[in-house]
Length: 605
Image (cartoon, rainbow, N blue to C red; front, top):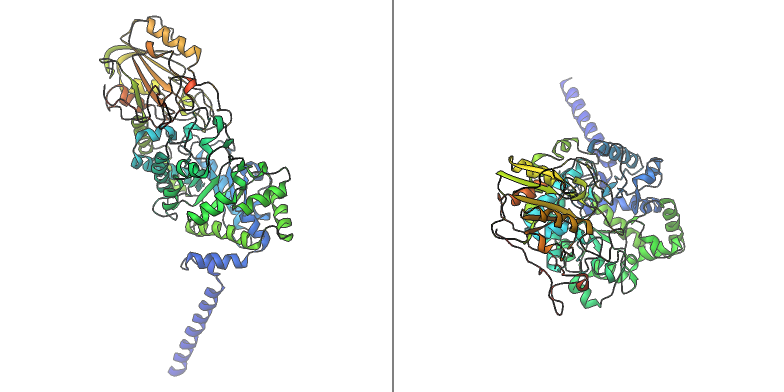
């Protein structure tokens, strides 16, 4: 009996082992996190239908699928994005995370359960979402000459992006701005390729962390490839006229360290080089980016950028996919794209090999991100959004990016007590104005748009012992004071609408500074702008001038320098023209004689 009992136990153990082996064998290789990523990718790719592959190359805007979220599953979509004004619910982190989870559940309901990646324009913090930490725009960060700080800021951004469920930031912008009239000048780190090299890679490291699979890592996207900052006349989506050597010298260098830093995606530019649209340039997208530079991630188009290639949509899709675009930001035409792709494959205009290359690149990134194991939003990150620790990093970015352009001895720093200070100007107490474009709204907007500290509020916190009176228009019952601070500048704008032919300070702001000067106290001007402005009409009436750029939500950083807690450190990331006759102006130009040279900045009072 004892031998029979032992035999039964052995047989049971063998049967259990066989059952477990059978169960393990039923788990596809691609779903096993212990397998190498390349093996998982090839296994999944081998199981996919043409329709499922086309789906992975599809990126739709959330507004396009919100009414029919089941289309995420029906068309096997690989990605969803939120464009500049594509919000959700009450625009809080919690609402965004709930939407993300609902979209992700649709993707996971498909046969192969391939998760989506969710992208947004987190270009200076998670700037679309209410209550987040909004950093200075890139033109200011370039003035810090501090890549470690910029990397730290990008780490904060990654954490606040991921709290919404979104896991792909369309940043960094590696544009080298060569014409101040361009409405995206502030998205560039400056006018030299060296700044793009230093800070672009720093932001990639900050966003993606040590590993794309990190708990607080998001996919970075180097943009806009290539030459977007060099268009004729600074026209957005325009034409960059330059020979190949000039393009390689000015606009390509920033992408090389970004690729070495492991950037997982690159966005094609709307603009053209010598009349050839980048979305259709096989030379720059495939021959140079992928083959020569060894970029192993995937290329995504810009918002409806494919549509600009040809009025015939199928022909446009043919051009862009064969040029090297791997994922198409439609953002609405996913049905048309699906149909066009199937037609192009059936007519042998797009090869299966090309499709497999695109999908392989996309899936590799998804596996590297750990999305198959952790596809849902991490609720534990919500508490850090807009935290004191995060805002302290942004505040440091503000004070280190502040450039002191002019000073009069004995005027600065301002005393914190015992003096009367008049504060005027439309930008002194306006959070929306100091954040600029790509802040809550695509084009930005004036007013109390989110949570933060205005420059006026920062001054009052920094100097509780001073008497600070404020009037935007400069109208005071008692105009006698020890100092006057005037905060003026550009109203918010973004791409397209920000293009201009006149960078002069407005007539109203010139008149306001003259008015404040007439009161007899020294006048300190703080300029809020996304680019250098023509200041010839205010120079004589200003005893000190700061370029504060677009500082974001932490206006305290201006007070840190204004009241002397920190010395000014910022150095110009762009040349500052004397007049519009000098625009465009860049270091290295013949007869280079700007008002303030590239790299200029007073660093003591």
